[in-house]
Image (cartoon, rainbow, N blue to C red; front, side, top):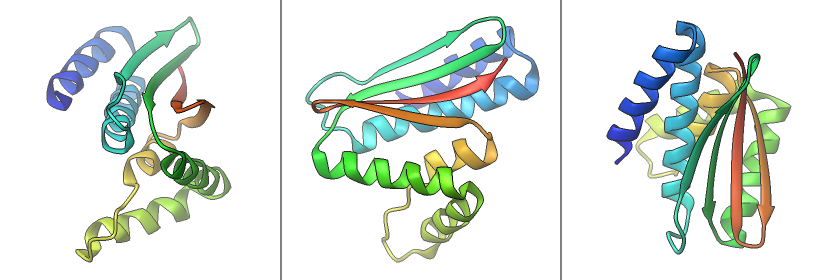
Length: 135
């Protein structure tokens, strides 16, 4: 499923946005969707949306989750807002360590590599994460 979604977002983005912007949108779509699937409960559907205007683009993923994972997400987003580069390096180390530590590299890639602003909203057990990009 992720491969097909990645292919779709790549083709759509390349057809509608400048190359550099298309790459950012594709990274955000893939990573946000992967997180929604990996950290969600699958009790409800995972929804991915791409919304854009003349000067902005939003990639939005919503899914159901549990309080502990929502708290973990909010803590991680706060670390990224404070220092995206340091958080990215820390998550890369976890990812490559082979110690079984669960890395949260996807959102760090969106914040640091793609340099997109991340926001989240929580309503009950439903979580929505958005990545904002200049078109």
